[in-house]
Image (cartoon, rainbow, N blue to C red):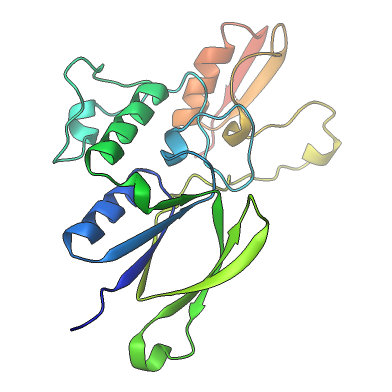
Length: 218
């Protein structure tokens, strides 16, 4: 009898959770490594700006409706708002994980350091995954039949450079690191970019800062 295939899943955000469930439905053995101590990925608000971890503002609300964003087999409760605050969306993901018993497949505070072809890759297609147990600060290797990368695309900010920026004496901050408007009272702020985050920060800071200028680049 063929052994059950083991699948490594990087990240316990919404994609990681759905991947765990999909593996279970296909009789695969998922092992999900999550760098933080909480599922939810980007939608788990954190006061601290953590390197390599996605982030939202404290006030962030989804810009797609719950009907369009829902898991097809687990719709959000009817009493949840149509456009959910990040805390509400996190609750939804927690409910999803509990309903399908997904948490027992997640190893929290474990960071994947490297994924490489195993020594028998040509024969088996297996991968060697190097993991760090953050709490114990120890490294170990595990071999998997497949790897699913579910870390999202909001982990590392893209920060453009501008002529003269190095001589600017004020504070320069990417919205990846912006949490809430505290400390901006009475200050002049320039927002560079007109994406979702730029629009959100402009609206929020316009209520506290002395002057907000929105600079657009196309």
